Length: 122
Image (cartoon, rainbow, N blue to C red):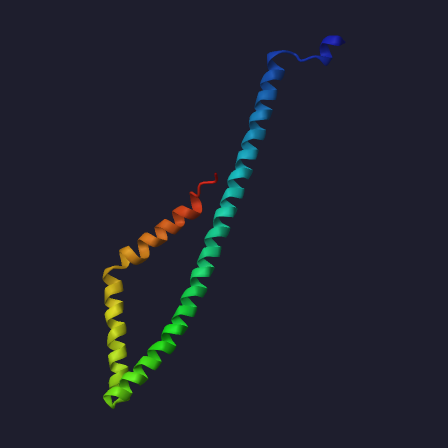
């Protein structure tokens, strides 16, 4: 009877090892899920901030460009010419942004993704 209460040797040790390994794998999966949730939360938070920031900057630029167009129109004596000059400035900015999109957009997006997913936790 006494032998039955003790370990039966290598079989019990193997079962304990398998059980411990399953528990380790389950904990590792949970850890990965939590890290993924944390990273996605940070990513969506930053994206939401960027979207709100762009909308606010866009509204400010719209008002400033309208004022600039009106002011140039008063100086030149033609509101249409003021609007045309403002549109030309925006077109120039759009062309520059198009040719420099890798530097301004893609690289900064890649850097942001790297910061979110591979942030050092010291």
